[in-house]
Length: 135
Image 1 (cartoon, rainbow, N blue to C red):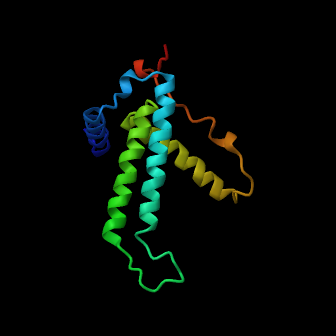
Image 2 (cartoon, rainbow, N blue to C red):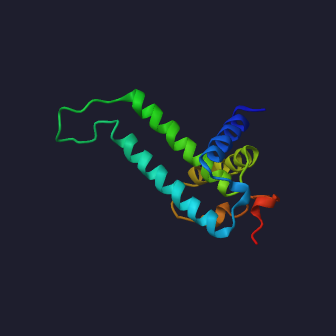
């Protein structure tokens, strides 16, 4: 089991302990949890911002690097939960990351002078799990 597989397993266990069972979600539940996790990540991002001295007018601020690290991990918790709601496994996330990384490099090679979301449409997301079927 890879480190990413372990993280996905641990996150699923934590979510189920909290009462969030992605395997039993219908379409409406998935929509709600995508919103819940996105909002939670936004809050964690705000907490990350508060870990760095962003107020240029205030001299009292300190860079709290330790807290910044914890906030990144908090964001990662919610990101993995979001991936699971969308039916992604650790392997799915890894494979899609590799493909999207290639797209991003191509964009940089070409100067990325125009937005073209179609350049990612070729990424094949093969999800054939029961949790992806809606009643």
